[in-house]
Picture 1: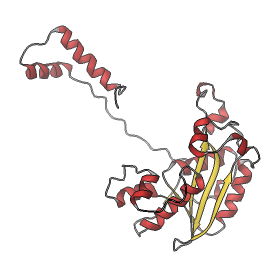
Picture 2: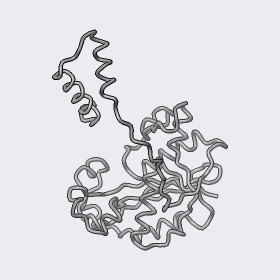
Picture 3: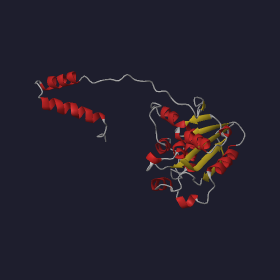
Picture 4: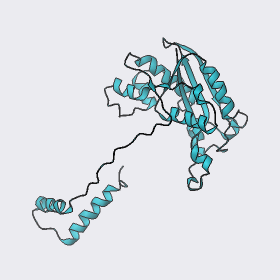
Length: 247
């Protein structure tokens, strides 16, 4: 069995999301780089994969993507489109049983979404996966809901950093090094279902008892509030609920 630790870089364009075509709505994040590290069953590195992808949906790499990743529009013009790169990636994964390993769920979600968008065979991908991010949180005694950034995890685990972050291959390398560092029997693969949609429970709507709120203020200040003061307190509460003043 092999562990395929991978990372992706995406291009996107939300500047005109109100007029997105049906195609762009189906694939809002277009993969422009796939980086991966293959580990054997003993977590030894076997080989790596690093390919850039010529975009077909968003022909221009957004400036902030270039600033983050260093990937430019000109750089991708000579690359192969996603279907060809994906076929090469499948060859890299090989025919042995494998577990896909990621840092956060975004990469595995967008990989399957890009595969479906291009009408490729997703059966070529293992549905067995490990999301390492919550396990690192647990390793440091945090709640699994507390997400730790990749670089923060690398630094905390005292893993050497020979490469810059925000390259798909480099981030896959660091994720693989994290797996080697924290691997234990409790880290078990799960099955990924690309069509699973979590059902959020409907919570009953709660209304504020403004009368009691105002009574509490009057108790605190030991006097009756004027109508203007009452209106200001209620307005301040409603403005605070918008979260627009959070730092």
